[in-house]
Length: 144
Image 1 (cartoon, rainbow, N blue to C red):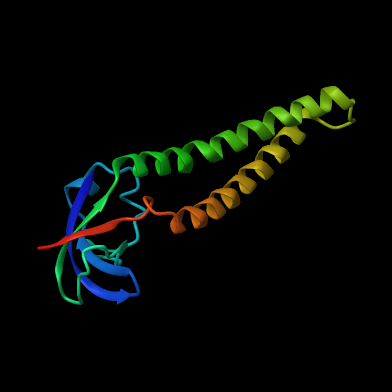
Image 2: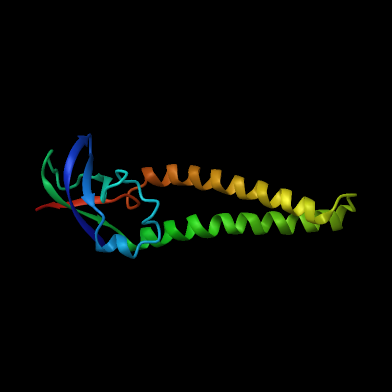
């Protein structure tokens, strides 16, 4: 489990918005450069389940499961690569199978790019579904 400390800056229902600084766990994270934070600062705002019933201004500990991060990283990096490869292979197979009068490399390139874009949209939709599932969001575990 990865834990970070931060300050609650907003509460909306059962969710807390926690402002934290990029810490030691961020240094080894593969998404550290693309993480949503305030531009030009080291601050990050995390939306987390507020199981500790923290209040505005409380200093809290936020926990994220390691398995969750590994699954998300795998999907984000391997999904687009798999989509591209499937599109390229499908382009080559279609030309050979149906004897289409088209350059096989051109069709492979077009289908590869198309499947890459479709994969990005698929990942986006899948991410929206995962946001609603418990266990895939950070959790405020305790007030410090």
